Image (cartoon, rainbow, N blue to C red; front, side, top):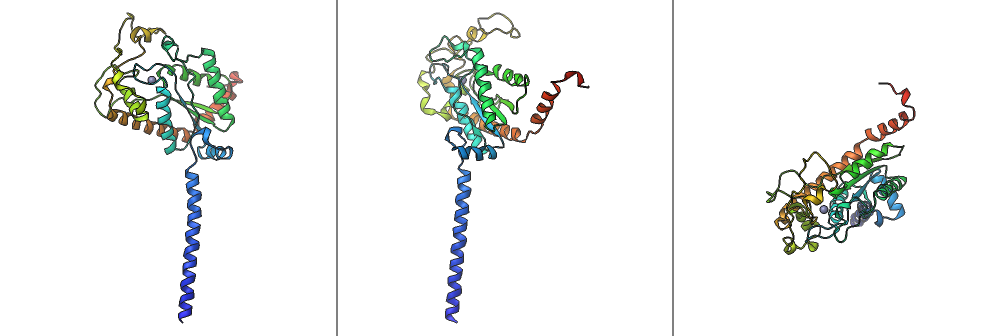
Length: 301
Ligand SMILES: [Zn+2]
């Protein structure tokens, strides 16, 4: 009797051990799946294939720039901030994030040290080849997340010109960086470049690169030197108003504001990735559009 009890007991222990080991192996598999990096450059070739599958073909292209950011922020502020937000967003809603990209529009800062201002043709050609190559590797939905105000005309134009000729992928542009309201009360009215908001966000993404003590070393006030109405556009408008490539007061920045704005930015980007993943209309209608555009006379109202 006793032997039988002992034998059943040992069997139970063995069974528990087997169950535990199985759970452990499964757990390891699950955690290695959970650990797949969102960084394009960190994935192995086979992990990249798995990543594309997991991301449902959605890849992020965080777009920054190298330009002066007042007297107190680093040249790469836009890229550092947008990558911080994009990487956190992709961690929450899986997408593959393309490496550092800063080949955008910044002609208006050529008079300041450290600006990398590529020519107009190269900006468009390089971006096109980059998205073409991303798509060839399975990124059939490319979400460009813009971190730089000077790209705000370039990127919609780039997206529009994707209709020029057929592409087997869709370009989406997400160009929001700062919430209109909510969070800690802002102290300043002019806040466009290296001001209260941008400096606050840098205090979250890279606090070690912020020099608050230098923020009042130059003026970020609006010089308002152009005497034409705002509905007439000129390329020199920015220089007429902010000749020191500084708009606002970095000294007004706080970590609390930065935290609120960065969280909002990451949340908004997560929602954007989710919408892009769910969007089956754009790829379908874009394909239909390309086909129709080869024979416009047959198109009926
Ligand atoms: Zn900036």
